[in-house]
Length: 382
Picture: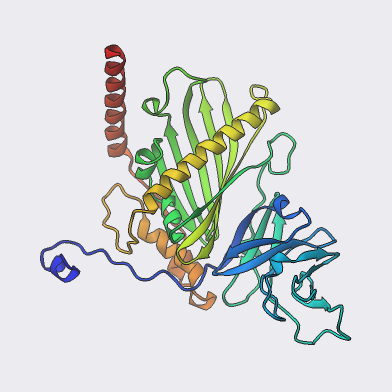
């Protein structure tokens, strides 16, 4: 059936424009800063091009376009010499500011010997790069907030994972408002769900119960549920203050969900977690728990990816009353893909939506009980 035929029979046709040809304005996390501090240049494919990350002699991290403006060699295949990155082809020396500092065999450096240097920021053990198609510098109001525990001794180090996802990065953003998928895809049990969008920040507040039907019976401490306040600061970096509630303690953690576009149809997805030590969870136990949660979160991303790689892009999703504010989220998200002068008030004005969870909780309780009954029956037969 064609789209024209569908419209005549009352069947809603799926609409989808081409993915944007520009990349979102904002800070993007490239990963743990320590991985770039090994004395070597590193290739990063982002924003539809190849970049090179290197540490200069003063300890600072720099990001340049990867291709040398002299004869086009790949600078990420070169060597770091002092404060400069040396091209592997003719040894032209490039500084972190994008200027060629030295050509060993030449009397002087051409005045136009410059390449693109990207604005970077190192914070909380993470490396960020600023992207703006208009070329404007980052403003103070869009700064990434400091993360509690990232530099404190009573928290673990980052447990960090990354995965390449072959789809447009809007798919991961839709999760901000999609409560129901947490039950069906990630086997959690949301009981409270609210969204707040304001300025460049989109927040998801979610409380939930444990799923006894989704874990092996009688193994480890009993988790009662969790509470989460997760905020995207800009188009690609989410900080989630996430607390797991057990019958004998609360486990405090901070989860990072971050990404940067490789091109219009793929992105690098990062997840990181740190866990706070406590009297009931000393350092060694907290480290073990952080790694366990890191594996659990990566499994959750794998579940998402399995959905994304088989679904189609859809601009006009057909929603029911218990779905979240998908259209409002996408309106907020659009602000990062237009010029600053074209950001409309409705993209940044405060918007709040608390989802009525009465019907979902009722249905999900019945499903959990039915799953447990089937498990018990299977156990008796075994």
